[in-house]
Length: 356
Image (cartoon, rainbow, N blue to C red; front, side, top):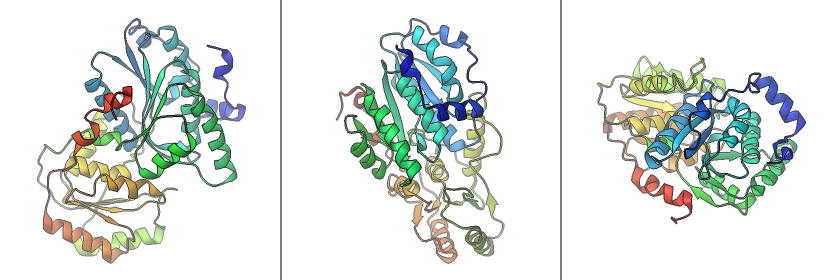
């Protein structure tokens, strides 16, 4: 591989180096253990505090281990792929592949993550690369258009890149801009899991609302909503999918199981987080869904709208949300009802190009 294929924009390189100061320290013991074996390199794994992204990583690994049992899985965190790429290529098996976890970081909103994705696509040019289900958002700004132009150049240059969209808007966007690449529409990988078997005594209404750049609610609106719920249902318990402490591969499952266990004890949940909604689907928890600033939650709900205990509120005035919670509490809990086999059975064949 030419050294030129490793080049990225200088500004991107410097900012990535500041964000990930340890990325240039080589360490290959774990990689060398898989030498001469067929490997799937699972990368873009998070090490931050967002349990939604960690659930995607957890589910992606579960999918690969079950569907590709003859392959070893090499997990590489987003911050570590820079130091591991050359070592992985030196120990390459002809059938090795790269899978990048999905999520909502394709675009200019989370540029470090997007730049790392481009690095992987450029560095592993001779590998089949699979981008698992993602949401794309390139803003209609000078910066957004510039980032999209770079992304198109890099994505379209790869000879064997498969893209998956987890919503219709992203699917159409990928088809329009990455014209030579196969594109599949698939649900978020977390929906590959099933955590509804455990039955717990349910008590209380829970709330999980964003307070960041992806929220469609202002601070005053959030307070009015919380006050209305408390006035109707008493003490409202809060949870968050961003837990305020770093999570890695060693603590990922424990943190996720703790949150899923909490949701299994909730009578109902109100959330504007995509994975707050998805976690409710996994655990069979009644859920009132509020839109976020873009299409991510609205179109994520499209995969789940057949679930009886799932209700979307597009214009979340407090009285509408409390009425929706009342309605779900009256109906009670149900099994998840998500048709996993319909979407994930045969996905390996689709990835290989054998399925439709």
